[in-house]
Every structure is written in structure tokens, then in C-alpha cells.
Image (cartoon, rainbow, N blue to C red; front, side, top):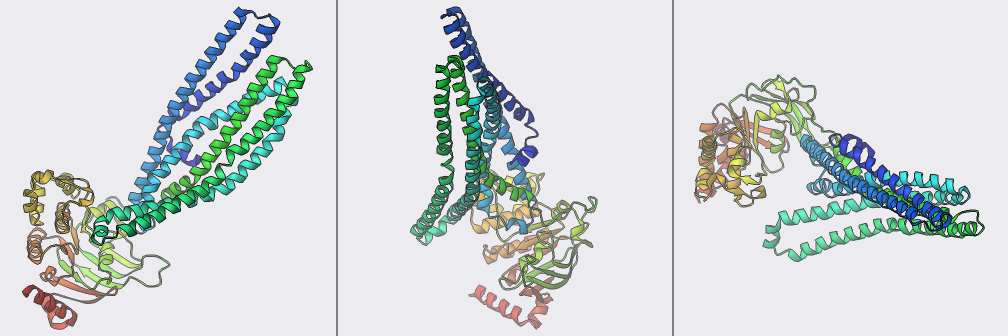
Length: 578
């Protein structure tokens, strides 16, 4: 917690510093009020026999001190709020930027639901703990020290009561902390499961309704909610003991002080004013102790959020380019796989790709066919270093991809992934992901090549049409074509189309292939497809199976010698003719 405070309060240091300063001033003002009250009782009422001028003057002093304390408290709260919001903003931004650096392998460790939870709910708990630290954890110790000083000054014998009480309070606090921390970590995991369930349901709501599974989803969500409720109740059942325990010890101290102090007043070992001031300082001490325990409990609850934030911040990306030459650029689209093998984790027993040897010339059009699970997508994801080869080397433009800065490499490679993602905003704004400097005319041209311009022109707002989150208001085929257009605007050296026309009809697919052949002249093009028609015109077609290359050739060569390719082509063409 304190390490995070040190790292992420730099730009709000002035607010973080002024908060405690005004808190200390508030404590000092509050600490002098009982002394003024003591003078009113001992001097104004008893010694001076009710001298009203003295009492009024002292009363005005009390009011001024109270007003100053209130002003300092308000300013302390203001600066604490400002610094806490800056702190949480900084750490949330740091977490988000860290996630942007992750490789696919890192990203797969953290489901979307848990990332969202850590950036929202966990940060809210962290902010509450921060405010408590700046306000209470500064105020309470100073209040405790000053009040304890006056307590020992007024009557050191009575002060021994707190010498006995403090070890009891500390023991109880440490016990509650030991029990509470693991419970709150478990509670946050239950919240992750709840968020994952909610996200999955909303994302798949069309499927839920189609299969009439609302009742099943309701029961599943109810079970997740029940799990959160039980975990929360279990975690808080130990924390709620904190206040009753402290109040029990506090009131026991008050009774002892009242009994012993009252006897001292009667025996004239202590003045009435001293006793009243003493009671005020006793209350201040006990209240300070209660505040410290409450803040400690707040930190205990937030510690689970701190741990989860640190997991994100301390996760090291598996793919880095820190020492790479910033002047090395991708000159052409040539690609070489040199005895490449790959597996998703070091613990995996079997390779996903095995001993891939392949050379692709710059400007060549390559098709890749193979059954589901043959690792076609995995193969092409090694080119822009979305993953790194476990063995062997992947080379682009004659250099190992690990030698390039990631920005330089990935700017030279455009990918249309299997899962087509569009973002909230207009169609034109989405297209500019491919090239932020693209003109409207260039965007229209790219959409024409992708066979989606007619659809856009038919909409009332045309290229200013707002797309919903993820492009939910357009069909799968149109979404694929918009993603192809976006990739074309990048003008890359290498373009990878990963099953990017699976949701369009055969005729549109054919027109897209012809347009791309015209547009992509000079670009190295890799087309992963399930339909032979999508790769039939490629310079070479790769047949993959179980992570290996089984055959390479053009359409005519494969039709002559590869039975699998020939059967697939004949089957698909029969479907077209029918």
C-alpha cells in the first residue's frame, strides 16, 4: 500500500502534503480547547467567583479554536480528496498502460472480468483506504500523542490505566488482521466470478434468448450472487468485532478514570477543571485509538485490492524490445520460418507447431488451408510477435523478428483476425485505426476494395454512422469487410487475412479476392481460409495438419497430387453448383 503511495502520488504531492498539514493544525486547535475549558472552571468559576469577563473571553477563545479546527478539518478533507483521486487515477492509468504492453500469453492469464474489477471496484476500495490514511492515520496518532502528553502532565497515576489497556487493544487488532486479510482476498475472487458471469451473459444475450435459457442464466447468476454474499458476510464477520472490542476496552478505561479521578477530586488531589480536562483528553485518546483501529481495518480490506493491483503492475511481458535497434526498419515483406516450433507455455508437453520450414517472397500471395485446430492462426501470429517461437527463428525482411522494435514490426504487418473487433464511434473513426492520417477519399477507396462501400452509402449518416460497442449494430459479414478495409488503410508490407471472409457469401468473397489482388500488388499476402475459392488464385497454397506443413503448391499442382485438397475442392464446388 505505502509503496504504491510513494510511486503514484508524484503529480499530486502538494495536495498529499497539505492534507496532513491541515490535519495536524486541526489536532493542535482541538487539543487546546480542554485547557481553555479547565481555566474557565478553575479560574473563572472557582478562583474568580464567576468573573463573567474572564469566562466570556475564554469562551470566545474556545469558539475561535473550534472554528479554526473546523476550517483546518475542511481544508484537510479537500486536499485529501484531491490527492486520493489523483493517486487512483495514476495507478489505474499505470495498470491500463501495463496491460497494453502484455503479450497474448500475459493477457490470457487475466480474464476481462477480473481486469475490469481491478480497475474499478478495487480502485474504489484503494481510494477509500488512501483517504483514511491521509485523514485519520495522520490525525489519530497526533491526537493520541498530544492528548497523552497532557494526560501524563495532569495526572501520571491515572495515565497508567492506558499503559495496561494498549497491549490488550494491540493484541485484538493483530488477531483481527490475521483472520480478515485472507477472507477479503477470497471475497474479491467471488466478485471476479460474478463479473465474469455478468459479462458472459450480456455479451451472449442473443444466444440466451434464442435458446430460451433465461431461467438457467438467472439461476447461474443467482448462484454467483449467493457466493459473493456468503464471502462478503464471512469476511466482514471478523471485521465487525473491531468496534465492539475497542469500545469495551474504552468504556472500561472511562469507568476506571471516573472512579479513581472522582476520588482524587473529592480528596482535593485534583481540581475539578483538571478532572474535566482529563476526561476530555481521555475521550480524545480513546477516540484516536478507535480511529486507528478503523483505519487499520480499512487498510486490511484494501490490502486485497493492493495485491491484485500489484499483480497487474508487476507482471512482466513475455515479449519485450528494450534493447532493440530503433533504426532497424522492415524493408520488404519477405518472411522465413527457420525450423520453428511453438507451444503456449513452458509446462506444455506437446508443441502446437512442429519444425516449420517455410520461405515466402516479398509480394507473394500465400493461402493456408487445414482443418480446425491445425494451428494456422498460431503460425501467422508469430510474424508480428503476438507470440514468440519456442524454437527456431521467424524472420521478416531478412532479420529475426526479435531484432525489431515492436512498433516498427507491427506497423509493417496488418492482420484481420478471426474475431473481428470494431470500437464505439463512427465508421470513419474506426477506419482511422488503420491510418490516423487517412483522408476521407482514402477511406472510401479502401471500403470499395473491401466491398462494403455500397452498404455504407445506403445508411442515412454514411461514414458518420455510429457503431455500437464491438460493432453490434452491423452483421458479421459487414463487420469482416469493415475490418479488411481498416487493414488496407495501414498500407503494410505484409497483410494477413485470417478467415476474414467466412461470414460473406461466395460471390462477395470472389469480388473481394479480385479487388484485393488489384489493391495488394506488391504486398505479401497471407490468406487463411476454409473455402478453397478464397485461396485458389494464390501463388502457393499451404496445407496444414496438426501443427505441421503437409504440402505446398499452387492450385493446379495440389489438384494433381494432394487427395485431401482435391476432395475438399470438389466437395465445395459441388455445393456451389447445387
